Image (cartoon, rainbow, N blue to C red; front, side, top):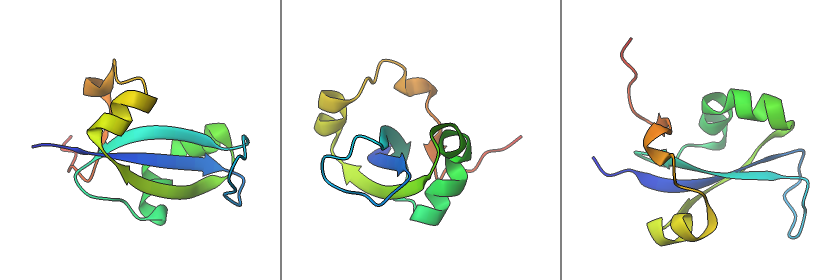
Length: 85
């Protein structure tokens, strides 16, 4: 199954252009998470970086490769996949 790429922004808010107080990361998903779903899925990142999930934006594979380190993407969790214990 091919995964889509999403950019997640975590910070104190509000989301303003040029604001360096926010943390951006790239993630995989089988579909776009809502802000509330992203908040739960990335609870540890939210706790570590403070604030809340401010944005979820779908990006292309080319954008992901250009702007993020994908060297360990095979280890990334995938939003929307059922986890079986």
